[in-house]
Length: 541
Image (tube, rainbow, N blue to C red; front, side):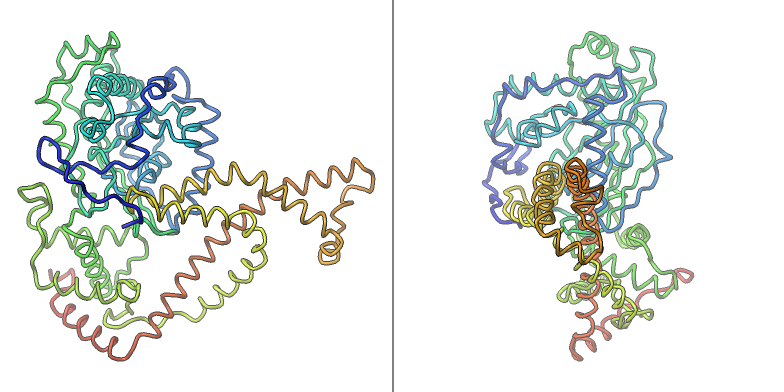
């Protein structure tokens, strides 16, 4: 767990379940500022400011490309384009969860989220321009962060605004679990998304538009809090709403811009109906060790069947098939997956733990599936080339990105919101830091180069101070061009660092495989052979 995470304090809700421990930020309720949050407009391309929305997503795409080693999207053809959609997913990776969905979805989004998104320094500058609507969670209310009347008024306004946007054909992301967490399975669903989409359906029905859908989304991260991990966003079949069950009084109320709670039975029915759509596209296991065991079995069976798992998506799908084979029921009586007690799964857990001790996993097995692979020496040359290129760009990286790396690591490790918030802080520092600090870093870089122009000119055979002539105006033009050139150089150094980091991680794993002791390898091979003997090729299953 990240440093500074507050321990569970014993507070529970009316069902006896533990309330999320509030971070310092989420406990700081600023009601006046929340009530003054800018409202979105649904008569233009984007609910928020078109300029700031496009700019924010441009920076998000650039940062995401460097945050993840591979990004894959699937199922976008399943999203209805003739109506709005409320995307629902499990929630384990903070702000990166909605970001992954919004970057792939074909529609613009009306956004809602935890109340402190619109009150935090720096972040609020963007969220208010994107017209993000604040929502007070049950945890803030029950812990005394605000009165019930204040929460009802704010949430009613926000949910009605989101519903209006969805009914107008925009997309939206709300997480039924209500909070980001570290578990390997979904927790109990809250009703906010269901109430919102039912209100959206009532608005759409009253105005003669097509009713929106609930869009289940699977979010898959190899190791969610690791830099340069793999991400797969999986859009599943849409969940259509029971239009005929929407009461007339709800339709009439929302047409008058009044928030009225949808019928409780209908809300609960929709909540319970959504869960089976999400369970298959989440890990849905009792522990991360069990999750790792299924991925290991999938890797071993891929070698037995000679069908290599070349992508993160293919590995997730193969591990899902393994899980479904051993899991008799998706959930137990307490809505949590029951721990699987099976000799094959237990053996796979032990092997997974043994590999994990050396930072290895199923991808590090050879073609037989019995031993650690030796590695490809040619990749060493590739890493050497990356290292040489990184060395060339190292001064630019140290100037532009090393302060952001240090700050992101510091904030991510010291957050009081758990490991699931670690990448959120690192992502925000990378994105906002480049926007706010690179102009100043570019001034420093330009001055350093200008003051050492003589030595640099000897190296590149170009006098950078007189690129456009020796006149004063020409030298000013050279200075401006040099300043502007800092930004693509900074960006290139960041991209190169990401590629170099990939090579470094691969080299580190190769070193771990090569330096594993004889006893370790013998024990691992015995375990793998025993496990493989219990598994059957797909054509004999």
